Image 1: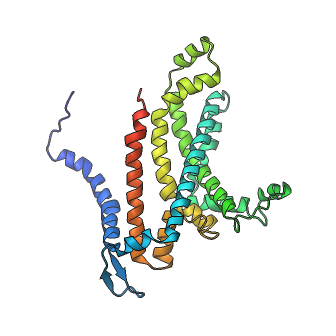
Image 2: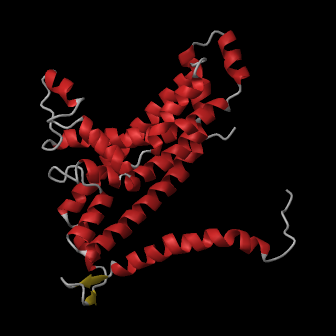
Length: 293
């Protein structure tokens, strides 16, 4: 294997320096602050702090509201990742079949990615508003008592739909790139041998998309856990009755609304540990089944 060499010893450090600086400022320093804050307790006015050790962690882990947010986060993350990836894969496969206007079709599917999460949430809230929502009216005509502001299950369905819709464009781009990398000769040879379109997809296309699917699984898991805060804040605000209060939204509620900084910091540390563990498990157990060419 050829070993890369640099003309000067400082050049490699200058190349990786900006990235190390950004990681230190925007990740390691805030993470260290959160870890230290999780060991403290502040008074009601924020004037005095007391070192309490792991008391904040013990209180958080025994809090029924936090345990409920664990369940809400699990349901929300699984459904959002599944629907956003499944629909994106379906659209990407269909886009490959379009012969005329393929570029225009792809552009239309990519546009939603440019929409900010809060705006995407407001868009879906207006569409499904129980009073004047355009898409809420057909549901009422079908006899469905649609009111996500009062019904927890309907609220969960609405935030999952909004979060999935926001992420479909991102997944679509990667699936299209993955499909274009599959050799046409393999598909043509399978078609000549009499394999149906469904069989060609499950035996050739889907296995060859495994690296792309694995990458998107990791990205979508992180997206559902962290980047959907704006959607939940705009659509339901964690309600009704905490039915859509995810872990990251509870961190915000306890820290910036209820001013319980110690508990909020402890929750953020636990959430960070969960995400790191989940990502490590995905790489350890799921990546083994991924074949890179």
